[in-house]
Amino acid sequence: MSIKVAFLGLGHMGGPMAANLVKAGYEVLAFDPVPAAQEQARTDGATVVDTGAAAAAEAEIVITMLPNGRIVLDAYPDLLAAAKPGTLFIDCSTIDVGDAKQAAELAVAAGHRALDAPVSGGVAGAAAGTLTFMVGGEAEDFAAAQPLLDVMGGKVVHCGGAGVGQAAKVCNNMMLGISMIGLSEAIVLGEKLGLTHEKFFDVVSTASGQCWALTTYCPVPGPVPTSPANNDYRPGFATALMTKDLGLAANALRDNGVDGQIGMLAAELYSRFNQAEADKDFSAIVTDIRKRSGEETL
Ligand code: NAD
Image (cartoon, rainbow, N blue to C red; front, top):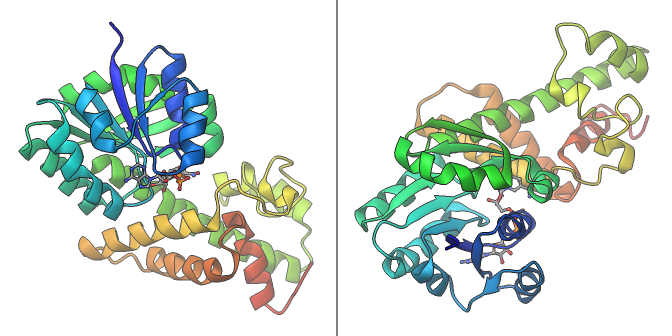
């Protein structure tokens, strides 16, 4: 008998993740309030139900892939009440570490099991089933979830107890935001000093300034043909999402008394850029730095 999985939140990420579970033979009970998302899930072979609770009531595993922590915490009481005792709840949304711990506590208090399992790899990774899962929770619950996470992911790491999956995600994305800003400032400085992008890349990609933001995701057109800079900064990873993740990082820095001055500043800079360019790829911050440096264009 196939395992029944409730899947709530069938957006850019959740839709293709649920489709991959169907392809792998899981029976997916899907819910999303948006009709277009429901239609796509039906086409992908999921059984679409009318409420999240109706999906949770039938399932052994409940996956949520929702926009933010408030929505997850609002959805949980109904889901937990409807689910059979011992149901495994896996929240794949990117949310505050504190919210993730609270969601896990609520699930355990209601007689269930819980993991936080945020992802990186974006929409392309969700479609290809190559996401990286960063998982927090008990070892035996991780072991139970692993076969299913392996279907949707290329790399699945048990990071620690409840909330520690979100911790890994927030730390990684804070570093990415900071390094993209640092790299972009260096690129604009190089421009002012007469260093071409090609020579900048040639030197720095193998020198001590080397980083993923440069070698895989170069924020200026040319050196890395697949980076969003070559496609008018169409995302990729939208500025709105980076701004959200840096907001979570700023909360985590504050809540834990970490003197993360650069992380806080990165959150502020992206928040400001987001007001004008939320839909652009986050690497477009280089164009903002250039503008603030008195150079409208190259
Ligand atoms: P999205 O907005 O495309 O999808 C979220 C879906 O949740 C929507 O379809 C919405 O209708 C649905 N929803 C809202 N409330 C619901 C409820 N109560 N029950 C069921 N469904 C509900 O967002 P997304 O891009 O798919 O991102 C989902 C999560 O994944 C976010 O937390 C995001 O930060 C994270 N994430 C996104 C990316 C990315 O590249 N898009 C990458 C990594 C992580």
